[in-house]
Length: 252
Image (cartoon, rainbow, N blue to C red; front, side, top):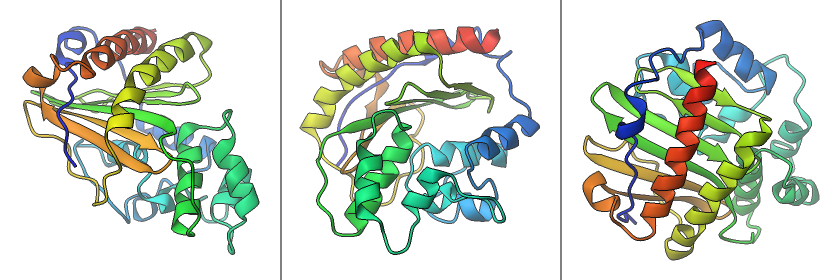
C-alpha cells in the first residue's frame, strides 16, 4: 500500500554537506569490517536501484533496505561472523535465529534479516517491531537518504553521493529513539509491502521506509502534503534534529 507521509530535508542540507566525504578505500574498509560482501554480484543480485553515480555508494544504499540477504553474506574465503553463520546456516537453526532476532544489542538490520529468515522458513514472528527508519528525499542534485537503526547506528548519503556513518556514538542514541517513538504510530497504522521495493521517489515526493519484524513498510507522497500530516510532522521534526547532528559530525 502507499500512504501519504512526509519529510522535508531540503531546508537543512544544502548549505553544509559539500565537505562530507568518505573516499572509495573507506567504502571497502567499512563493508569488510562488518564482513559484508562488497562484490556487486553479491550485493546487487536481488532488488537493486542505482540513484547514485558511484556503484559502491549504490551498494551501500541498497544494503540499507535488507531485501537482498545475499548482500550480507561473508566474502568468499573470509570466515563468517557469528551472526552471518546464524543467518545463513543450512538447515536453519531456529533457536539461534530467534535469539538473534530478539537481541536488542544487535544491529537493527541483522535483527531484521533474522526475522526475515524465520518468516521465510514458515515461522510466526511478533509483528510491528520497528528496527529501522529510512527517509529518501529527491533533490535537485540527487537523492538524499537518511537511515537510522534500532541499536543507534545512522547512515546518511548526501545527494552528491557522499557518505556519513555513525556507529557507537552514545549521543546519537537518544535522537534515534525519539525518531523511532514517533515512527511507531505510523507503523501501527499500515502494513508490510508485499511487492519488490520501488525505485527511489520522484522529484517532489518523499518516502519513509520502515524495517519491521514482519516486513518492509513504507509511506510516500508529496512533500507539501506530508509536512502537514499529523503523524508525519513529529517524524519530520525529530529526523531534522538527527540530520543536523549527523552533518555536524561529518564535518568534523
